[in-house]
View: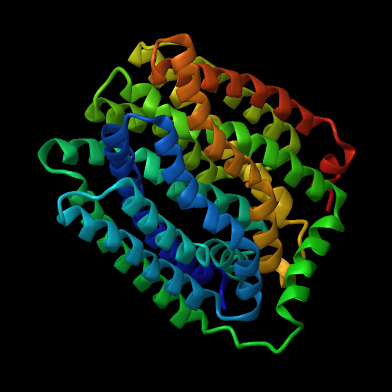
Length: 409
């Protein structure tokens, strides 16, 4: 199989995920605005985010084992296609006098359970298709597709909400699942299905994923540091919307999110074209330190120009950090254990998100009451503190010898 054709097949897969990401972003934005207008609570917004994330995290390890034992492309098709069921449930509830917070949480939970099948199989499929030299370039494109939910979705959703309601956003999202399943099916047909292998037990396979990570000190340190970093990034992710919505409308929020996410577009394009040629550890540390500083700047003002500027620079820093993390981990994991290893990496590195989603909204609401200035000011305080702590923890990436050794062939 020629390398050039493999990259073209990766692009087919990538286009499907790009479209799916935009659709998912529409739903995320629309439901966030809907829940905030319904309850006026950052904690309830955080609850919806937590329920959308927690099943994916908890199931990431067994999903990684499945990705090594069964056809990865088929698992992606099942995960993408069936995750639409949860969105359909919310849509039907919306048609019947509006959905309650409980109904929204149930629908998000259903969708998230099936989505858990996708990530380890998707990452392992990239390894199946591409060479080591193409990983950095592909990582930039993958991150660009993921950022589409922040780049294109908010401004589209903000505009659509001025002429319709959240139900239209849900319908569009459901339609995008079709494109994703088709693109995955095309790639599966081209490269063939993975033959089921009779191997060790499910639990032993899960332990093998942990053994692969534990066997490399640098990877283990990087995963542990990533968990701390995701804690503060998760707080920003949850609280940015209620912070802006406390003094602006949904359309303004959509425009602001799109402008901020353009930072990811610029960086994603640069990385997709050029990649990173070296100094991955230094680039990782510096980009994360800058991300923390720009995050803190985001919460310091209510001037939309300054907010957009800080948000743009924050998102411009993230693709470089993500690219370096992806490269350092991917090139230090044996190819035969990629699926189970990525499942374990995803589980451990994203534990910080669980804590962030569980406490950030509650903290913002509590601080807002204590300060007597509302949830918006409470959210700003948490965002500023998180940015400062992110910069401090990110600086630790530059120190461990084991992490620096990951760059050596």
